[in-house]
Length: 219
Length: 219
Figure: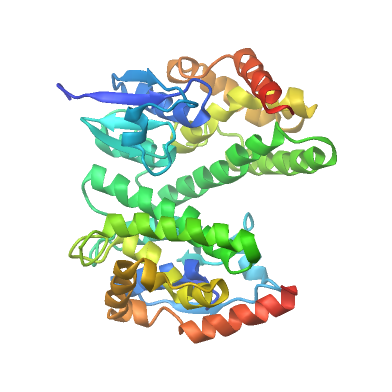
């Protein structure tokens, strides 16, 4: 649509923000990316997301949308022409939402505690994390994408966190590929898409960032 | 629709299950309610929700849908004729989803920790809980419902937890009405609807149930 103003309040290493970038790229939506300082938060960020004060925020013609899965649903509805993310069938839609919620609670939240944990606690978290990845591998089966032949909602929700896999593996001393080869092969297929390769940072950059955070936190 | 089979795997004091009951009642959908034993879980529950092993599960013509907000979205799409829950406008939809997510994370999850906490920890949780209720009061403004003149998605998502307010107030030694009179007045208006009054248990029953749980847990 002409004359539209689309702005993303972003932070480069946030998997949540990457979801939005992948979706906008799939939809062919042009936008202005505004990187945010998450220590000294801008008045724009505080005004646009007064409740959670977090990125990502999508600002469409001046109106803010917050929370990454809410933003994905919005993008799918506001720009329905290209690359439909959610299936049309109500049951299939419900399943896509169920798995995106699972990915949020188990894979994203799990990653946050995994890379900061130590010793026995880390072993326990790691075991659960692998179990949850295996559950997702069971959902993928032998399909190309979680959406079957087409890249869809679950793929967009899941793929960004794979940019943190190297960091998780290094800090956690384990191999995701040895446990979940189909997930790693799926991630490689996703990264052949420009929408994904242009939106996800290098694993090394994420690792160095995480290393700096760990040092700063004294972990 | 004729020949449909709708089953709800339920537990009477679960605010999540109440959401589904309110939505089905608003939509005029007939269903069979199957109360579940949450200590010795039935093979049906484990088969229908193998991932989380939790109620509520809605089984529509043999196919299970899990997670209460996912179920609400499904109900709205599968039975679109009566009482549309989500607004049609993409931006309004996104706002409804944002607040339902806020209610899940802050008001439902907050209630779970509040009624079991003690002393200083409880005071801290209580303060945050009231702040979050005040944020919702700000969203309600002076409207009849969160959906404006019509009862909608945010109302369905929020109203069940009010059946736990008396328990929270008694264990937490505070008054929600004194802090958030508009929320309490809104809850009364909601309870004038049969869909709500028939789906929510009495506050006393919930309190006695919580008291038994507290004793069993040795709190």
